[in-house]
Length: 98
Image (cartoon, rainbow, N blue to C red; front, side, top):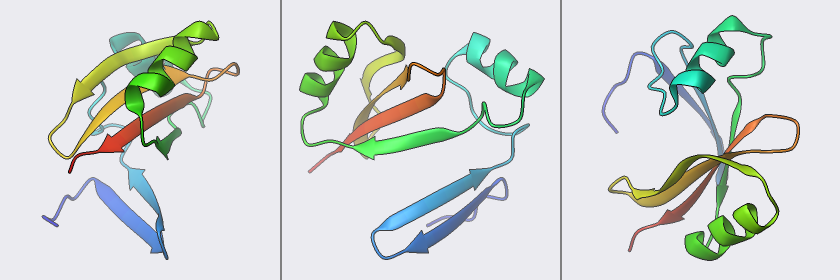
C-alpha cells in the first residue's frame, strides 16, 4: 500500500478503521464537505459496509426513502455508493471487484 500522509489505518483481523485528516480528505459531495468542516465533530464519520449485491442494496436504500449522496460508481477496486442514515451520518456501501 502506498504511503498516504493524510491516512492512518488501524486493523484487527478482518476489520479496519481508517482515520483521515479532515482538511485533506477528498469529498464527493460539496454540501457534505461544508457541513462536516463546520461541525459538530463526528459528522465526518463514514461507516463502510461491504455488500455482495450493491445494486440490490442501492435499490433498498432508495425504496426506504433514504438519501443517496453518491450514486453507484466504479472506483477501480470496488463499486460503491454513499448515503445518509436517518440521523444524517454517512454510510458507504462497497462491492469488491473480482
